[in-house]
Length: 284
Image (cartoon, rainbow, N blue to C red; front, side, top):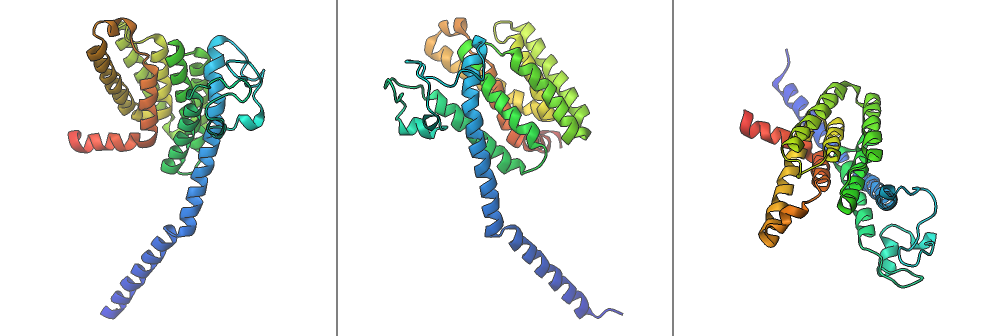
């Protein structure tokens, strides 16, 4: 027969073990390690962002992404390696070319910083696991496509098609159990935006439709809040432009891929939580 004090002692032991485990989990050493990994992700993101600037500038023009090396857009002088450090070099040079002194667009460090923050946020929220080989390239694709659509009003097949193939192949390796959901989400998002494009041809093009399908392949059901955020943000910007510019705003239109990219990045970070929030408040 167990004595009551035995149960009390066992509960006390379990409580001490839980407290010790919590302390170890929240230890400064572990927090420092997590911060280090997030910082490394930010550095990687900044470097990838530098390459994305090349992609955004050269790919729509049919130029090589490898040769020649980066040049000043004004004087065409090759940029030295020490002047090509992501974000830092632009700040040190105060946004000007070392050779000719002409201004260099702040978009370059903006893309690098956005990619750095996106990579750090994904690693910080999702943790370090095999799915990062799917999630981080997806974030880079969204940023590149958004930049190209802003400049040229196109969503290149040379990005979305390889992204679709890579997304399916990589997901088959690291999250094979989710592959049916991902394929269905991709097909569903593609069909949804296809119907929207057919109903309102001036609002979006087939590039946006294909990008939505790719988003479904990476996000699964989280593509639903991604599309909702994209349409909400796009509508808000459209209303503001119409209020400021009147009927002229309707003629020029607004590229939609940046809004899809915004929704995709948000869903990448908190998509499942947004779905759960919706279910708890509207379906339960």
